Every structure is written in structure tokens, then in C-alpha cells.
Length: 147
Image (cartoon, rainbow, N blue to C red):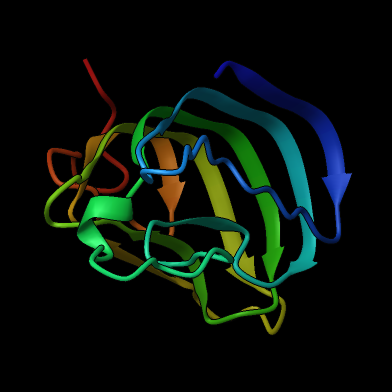
């Protein structure tokens, strides 16, 4: 699945990136969000492999119904978050999120206070200024330019 969202000013963006067949396998990959301005958005950047609108059939587990997520890029995303947590990558221990990238992301709370980021089983890289600080495994510290 290739998808790009670019040059938008958003108050809310809801996207379900899911390719599930009856067995619950699939993927969301090669997705790019670029040049987006968030205005008081709840959960402005979120990947949640545990959230599903489909019931888990008998005999299955959440782990076997997890969609693989990889090569997701967030580039030049700025604005305000209505929620304390502006960035959430909640991924499966069995099928972790891979190659997630944050470049020039600047999200603050509407109140002006700092926002937070949460990662579980997510890896990738961060470049440029990333606020809140990236929690991705393998990412460099905030404010340090990539060479």
C-alpha cells in the first residue's frame, strides 16, 4: 500500500491503514505524511496495532491478527495537540513497527505545555528537530542533527 498525505491543515485526520483478509494477516507500509499543520488534534501522530474495529474470531489471538507496519514517514508535521500525548506508536511485540521515521516534527499542546511521546515495540529514526523527543528504538536524541 503506497499512500501520501501532503500539504494539509487538519483539525482531525482519521485513517485506518489495514489490509486484513479473513485470517487477519496483512500490512500497512510505504505511507508518508508530509507538510501537515495540526490544529488542536487529539492524538496527532498515532500507530496502534492493538486498536481494531473487527472482532477477534474464536481461536485467534491479538498477536495473530496484527497488521505489519513498516516504512511510515512523518515529515514536516507541526501544530498543536489537544491531548497530552502527541505521538503514540503502540506496536505488537510479535510484529513490531519497523522503519518509522520522524523528520522535522514539532507538536506542542494547545496550552503551550510540552507534549509527550510513547513507543512500544517501534523502531526507526529521527532527523532534524523532533518535538516531542522521539522514543523510537534506534532514533538519535532530540536536537542532534543526523550526519
